[in-house]
Image 1: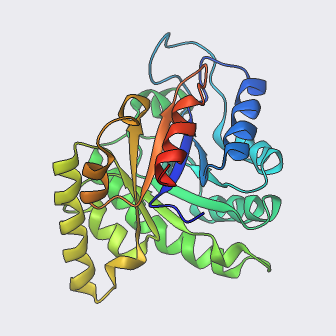
Image 2: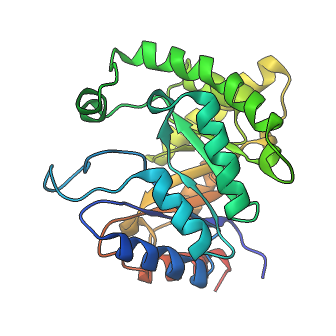
Length: 256
């Protein structure tokens, strides 16, 4: 059945077990989620700061073989944590594992504890954005050089809402873009992204626009989100990974 919009589910890989993550990924896939995501952090972002937390790319490899339909990726990983060519290589292998369902989600990074406790230079936001801008052409080049059959088709998602730098990078390099409500701010950023595309001669419709939403928003006025420009809504899923909001969102996407 055609859907009005795509539906995704982001598993927050903290304060839980790996088995719970695997079960959540399988269930989201069985329900018909278009995409399943984790994030790329070394420590919990909320709750007890030293609670359990699980590594992004190891989880994605497991999710690749636990699922059959949904596209999978990180929402999003910091390019600061890995050499960009290595990151592309990892995404290419994930694409093979998943049968062509990998998405390479990247961003400039922001969570200082990840950097300081794992020995990365945190710097400031402009420096991290410059790093992202330098990494993106290297990532694309490496993806295109990886072995067939699928890696060169791995879509790149950029996460973030910065209007002067991040959206310019989205216009030039991304196949997908993700940020958060409020809806009026999202709509403004969509317009700015369109303007950046016009400056470089790119069709803005080539960029899929995703929005991260809380599970409490599933039963609200989704027309506001869609009217703001989103075509793909991704639920932020905290442990215990309640799938009822995902079921309801899929039903709404299908017009039920």
